[in-house]
Amino acid sequence: MQLTRYTDYTLRTLIYLGTKDGIHTISEIANAYGISRNHLVKVVHNLGKLGYIETLRGKTGGIRLAKPPEEINLGVVAREVEPTLDVVECFSAESNQCPIAPVCGLKGILHEATDAFFAVLENYRLSDILKPRNELLLLLGMEN
Image (cartoon, rainbow, N blue to C red; front, side, top):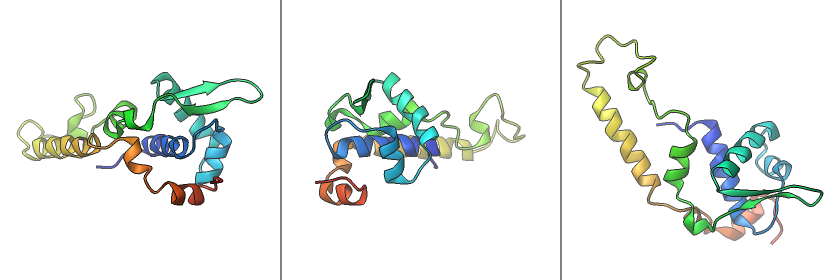
């Protein structure tokens, strides 16, 4: 199972915002992770629509978490932002070209594995992965 870069950036954004209270900018997050600001703009827009972050406009604007880290479930976030959970072609009725799909035993196993993957993620909240706070602050270039 591989999550998309979009989901990776989504989770990284939440980690950054959860590491230190306050208002942060997209550029600040992009610089901390060495990733594209343009990609993060899309991520932040979606996180705002989903209610995970607040966007504040204006000269002193930026973004911050809209909920406490204890209320942000990693599995729920991943399911909400993954464009498709089709691990293999046969998961998609629209694009499936596999001739053995109707009788393939692998499809059921991969569905089970995907469900197990997300079940594990659903056992964790954002707060669970913010525990090495001082180390995160240091690695992300944030002041203590």
